[in-house]
Image (cartoon, rainbow, N blue to C red):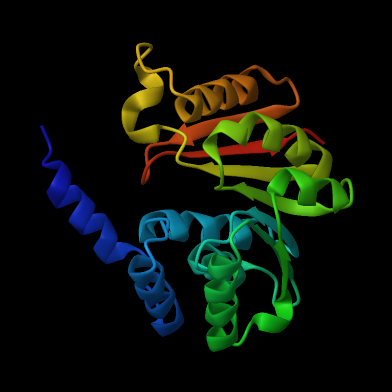
Length: 210
């Protein structure tokens, strides 16, 4: 049996590290008690942006701007990140992170409930849609994501394992049910081809059929 901690440490040593804007964004997020994706998850986001040469990304849940910076680091230099945040104080921290990184001009920051903001975005216009907001609303976000993604676009969702709670049928709180239903909906959707990676708290990645 391999030592999981030794392997995790080894893999972190090979992964792309945080630069100063990322470290600062993480520190501010921690100070404000805003959840931020693990650096390993950030590396996946940047990889996907690079692999798709993404020019248009929608992020549902800005947090303190940490995940947005990972995306922007992998996107086409002229690419635009559209990021939606419910909390004005979180949005302010995210905007500070973008400004410090010199990428504020590449960010469209929307304030308000995601389910009210998403209908304002154009159909078939985005290379990547990233979901990291209210867990109970993930199934509804999925409906919008399919509409927003271009054919061949990529859906990404964080926290889909919910600390293992999704696998325990005795757990039936609203957030866990939302995630469980979301995972099942993606798996059963003939227009989506995806997988769940056990990185961080679970990342679901799916490609929309062309």
